Amino acid sequence: MNPLTRRKFMETTAAAAASTFALNSAHAAANEKVNVAVLGCGRGAHLAERFATLPDSQLVAVCDVDENRAAKLCDKIEGITGKRPEHVVDFRMLLDRKDVDALAVATPDHWHAPVTIQACIAGKDVYVEKPCSHNIIEGRTAVEAARKYKRIVQHGTNLRSAPHYQEAWKLLRDGVIGKVMMVKAINNQRRGRLEARNDEPVPKGVDYDLWLGPAPKRPFNYNRFHGSWHWMWDFGTGDLGNDGVHQIDLGRWALGLKAPNAVSCSGAKLGSKGDAQETPDTLVVTWEYNDLLYVFEQRDFTPYRMQGHRMDNDNIIYGDTGYMMIDRNGYRVFHKNEKGPSFDQAWTDTPAHYQNFIDCVKSRDADKLVAEIEEGHYSSMLCHLGNISYRTGRRLVFDPKTETFPHDDEANQYLGREYRAGYELAKI
Image (cartoon, rainbow, N blue to C red; front, side, top):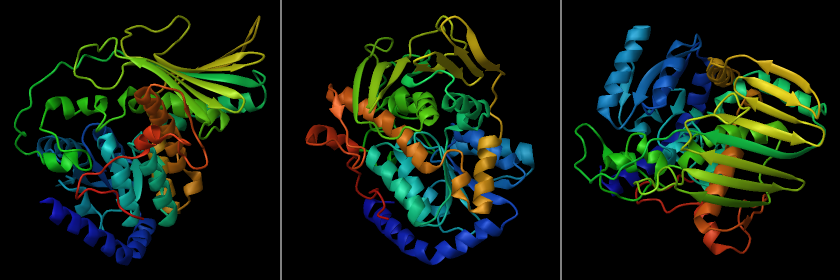
């Protein structure tokens, strides 16, 4: 499909959405089971299994530009449920289907918001993986689309569904560590190197042009394809947006933080020095709020945990009378000469986050979403702000109301992107 044809397809889809919107909405609310289509077979494989096995949902389609991966996932789901989902290459073919109520978006980052926005226009509900956007403008547009078309949109920050976090936040509100002065989110990983590769022909069974979508045209290279796209600016957001967003989301949620007043970032390629990765593997980001500093540390070269930490990723919340260390397995409170409350239980990714989405699709009550799209936007925004500060090389003042950098044209260029012809961001 050439760009002109693609553009015409998008215009036709948008026009048809208005007439199908009411029907699709009623269909999703009335169904005993919510019919879900999963986009992407990486993280999407986990989502596909969840939505295929929840009692109130069923997987009707797997959408992926790589028919090889899609066939394997369809085989797996058929083996689990006895029902084989349909393989669809182009997600836009799902938008006016009456048998699809919701899309679960687990594509590369650069497609997250564009798919979410088009799905909302078409009257579909959306579960979108983190980060919900590739840049700040399209993240805010996704929020506006959800509001305008009254869609249920859940963000994939699934740690929010572990109940001990809310228990811990209540302790903070009750003053267990006094006034909170600083928050630190920590993301330690051991990422492999991405050695340089030559460009090569597109593999058989892959619609690479559609995979590129809104991103600039590039020759096919496995360093820009499955998984490795995370470390390329055109498609991913580095480990700040890939895994760090979980810890960033938790610290922000703990204190009800939204957009900051300023951001600064120092970063480097240390463990990945000299390889093909574009994004930094080591970062220290600071977001400035009125009376609080929020700091993020990323080290993608560490095969070890820090002394006193139970996991590779966690948050530390510092108050004027004590501090709290919290991770997905629990929390611990420390005062000057004694320990405070604690909780410890091994975490597993239960169906709770996905069931919450399905429950809200059926009830049409977005207020009960654990990670509603605007919450996802703010957490993704902090990731984007850190990356923008790193790429400009300086501290940046940010206006939370306009979500722009006052009087800074260079920084403002990173708020959005130039979309490839035929894949422009849909107007809402």
